[in-house]
Amino acid sequence: MKSEIFYKSMSKLYDLIDVIYFRNYSNSPRKVVFESIENGDSVLDLCTGTATNALKIAKANSRSRVLGVDLSKDMLGIARKKAQKADILNIKLYCMDAAKLKFKDKCFDKILLSLVLHEIEDGLADGIINEAKRVLKDDGEIIVTEWERSKKFFNKIVFLPIEVLEPKPYKAFITKDLKAYFKKCGLIIKAEKHCDYSKVLILKKMAG
Image (cartoon, rainbow, N blue to C red; front, top):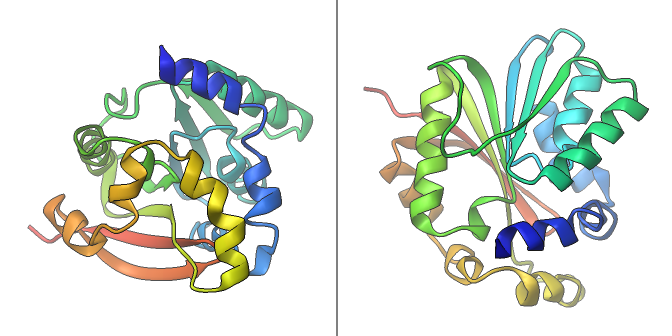
């Protein structure tokens, strides 16, 4: 119930993340994610929120099948209004638990996890990652966007609200060895790109 109330209140403010932290598109994780998708890819955006990534991808890739899932009806309501306003038709949005996906095995080329893992306890994170692996094609990619602390003084000041307002799991996650963490989950980091206040990891299934 607490998380439902939190995301209900956050839904109207969520897109401010782009205004404050990702306004420089040339060094934004949105750009990295967007350029990682090929027209025709089947794309699943887990915990899609207001579907910023999913909508941009769907609009630019008319041959792609884009799906977004989230447990917050308020977030999805905003996402649907944005899709309708932009007349984007090749996207579907579902109220669904990312740890209990209702999709067949190995049916997506790309799976997005943007600013999700730092908010949740390890048990739930493991469940979501395992489901992502299950529905990912063997040659597919999981694209993870996560916060990253900057060494620049000004950026540290701007980043303070994130440090203060993020939920409890954030403090442990921000210092986690992600290479070891994803290896434990059966994934390897194929590429890592650093952006403003964030980084994007391109993950592949480990052989065997």
